[in-house]
Length: 251
Image 1 (tube, rainbow, N blue to C red):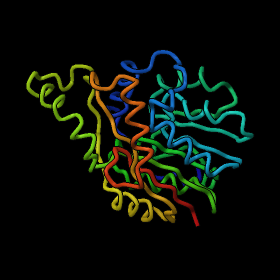
Image 2 (image 1 turned 60 degrees about the vertical axis):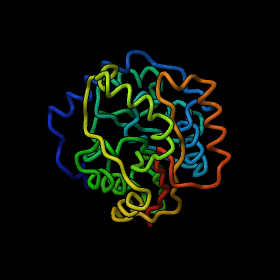
Image 3 (image 1 turned 90 degrees about the horizontal axis):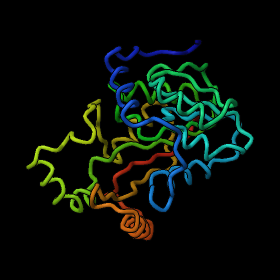
């Protein structure tokens, strides 16, 4: 495909993601409750703020929740994921009109300038070369197109404090990988550092923020998460959330 670049990930890395899919993705799921899933709520808000658009890509679409939530808005929609098993579930959820392809973020199977809106949420931190993934996201954006992207924040101070007792118990009992035995690359970024990476890919950052605090199981029943989300949303802009979100435009 013209303009496509970057090295393929190793076969072993793809196998890791297929194992993750086997453990976590079996059947299409209902859309998350935005009162409980703050990330789903906020990323949809950021995307909705850039509509209407004609051509939309969810880069790292997972179970297709954003594709489903944004359906019916008159956009040509596409999604990519590294796992074929996950895409099987996504096809059943998103329907036949969505162009779904297996690919890794460092080598997207689309021509230059194919989309005027790209979403990439909680994917870039799992790449072996995040800068290559950002370069590809910028490449497939048309001039004037917008990237809405999120990743893990390296200063999730509130969440660390809230979950400190649980973390101590998990560490003492050796339960760290009990519920999720598959390991894969995982990085975290500062707010300013991630914004610089996006700009180095050739995009102009128009907005950046951190948001969301998290209560891990068994500390996070739905009622507690709803209350915590209401508190976090009521706060003025801050730099201590779990998630870094950036909105950037291609000149």
